[in-house]
Amino acid sequence: MQLSLAVLILFVLAITISAFRGFHVPGPAQRVDLSTLAQEGPFAEPGLVERAPSRYEAYILASTWEFTPPEIRIPVGSTITFYLTSTDVLHGFWVEGTNINIMVLPGHVSKLTARFEKPGEYLLVCHEYCGVSHHEMAGKVIVEPRS
Ligand code: CUA
Image 1 (spheres, rainbow, N blue to C red):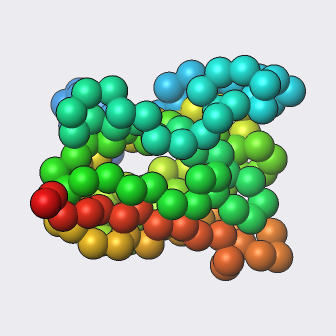
Image 2: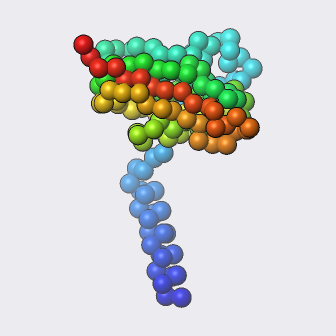
């Protein structure tokens, strides 16, 4: 009984502290209209955009059961901001070996910025069950060494 109470107090404390310390999770940056997604806005032509040297934005569409584009290529040391949305159901976006892990919802834009310090191929997968071919929904981030 005392142990249960102690654990409960600990949880309440953890939640309270995280609420006041500016703790934030990747959130929906904006909303998008699914009916016009393919015609207008950055998701009409999904892909990589270079905003400055070593600074990229990636607009990625998640749909059953693929990511568009399925492959992103950046030079090592680049910072990339991912903007993701779904055209149909809830999907996930997880990049192996990194802390990039976000949910992708229809009608919402999920935004996440990351820096790639090591060259290599990073597998990206959908980690939210989205139907029969969920396990095949994958892509990759290719981080190329600088020449
Ligand atoms: Cu998309 Cu699982």
